[in-house]
Length: 254
Ligand SMILES: Cc1cc2nc3c(=O)[nH]c(=O)nc-3n(C[C@H](O)[C@H](O)[C@H](O)COP(=O)(O)OP(=O)(O)OC[C@H]3O[C@@H](n4cnc5c(N)ncnc54)[C@H](O)[C@@H]3O)c2cc1C
Ligand code: FES
Image 1 (cartoon, rainbow, N blue to C red):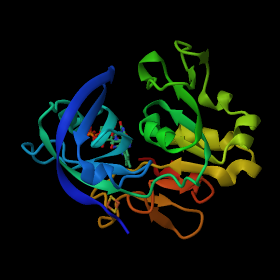
Image 2 (cartoon, helix red, strand yellow):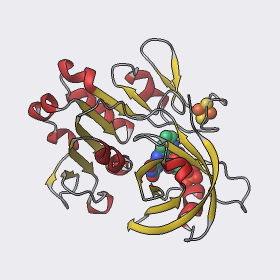
Image 3 (cartoon, rainbow, N blue to C red):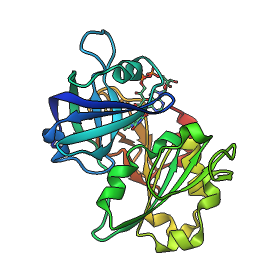
Image 4 (cartoon, rainbow, N blue to C red):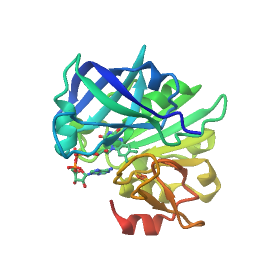
């Protein structure tokens, strides 16, 4: 059962981490005490501006008494969120969705594309060991983590190439959980290089345009191989790769 509630959360810090990429932290033990890696919040970008519906953002990591978000400034909603200042109060609904399924004592292989890796820190902090593979277009799209393998399309960080080039049989065999998050085309390419025998371990953090974020508007369906569609906001955003109908999902676009 969902433990999501609506909270007035105070902004504790705002930091620009990369060009057009902002980190905002909120003080809110009501959300942080029940959140799990892979879950998200629906945030009201501004109480003063209408109409801007809430925007879904993954919980990047927990802080002492709250949580942090990391997001790309791509439009009106995220622009307003990036303008928040410490001390501001925002209306936040969360924690929402069903996150990563992590067995006890798990070794996790995380494969992220660009800003898709926002949210990985919470997962890294929650597992026994994590190997992180990141692909990005260039230096300005690489989220800083501790130890991770990075490739970039322009070669400005790490080897020049795509994240699929970092996926080895050894890494796949050693992992209990393979967590993938990024643009749909990137996730489909990663899925394509994973041999059948490892596919049962693969979990995919899906994305969809969202309305309500809690299961009532039917606006966020992800096509499944069996059972038609499932809601990204309540039954996801994380699904097993074997459940997803990749062809129909890609065709549907966002
Ligand atoms: C469950 C979930 C978790 C998310 N977590 C993060 C996160 O941690 N960090 C982050 O940067 N973004 C995340 N997103 C995407 C984020 O919600 C959108 O970028 C944001 O809603 C855009 O709002 P906007 O008003 O700024 O842009 P809009 O004006 O609404 O759109 C601007 C551009 O962004 C595209 N866009 C809008 N929504 C999405 C979406 N859901 N997915 C992909 N493209 C979109 C639009 O097609 C358009 O091209 C998440 C989305 C979902 C569904
Ligand atoms: S966003 Fe409304 S049902 Fe998922």
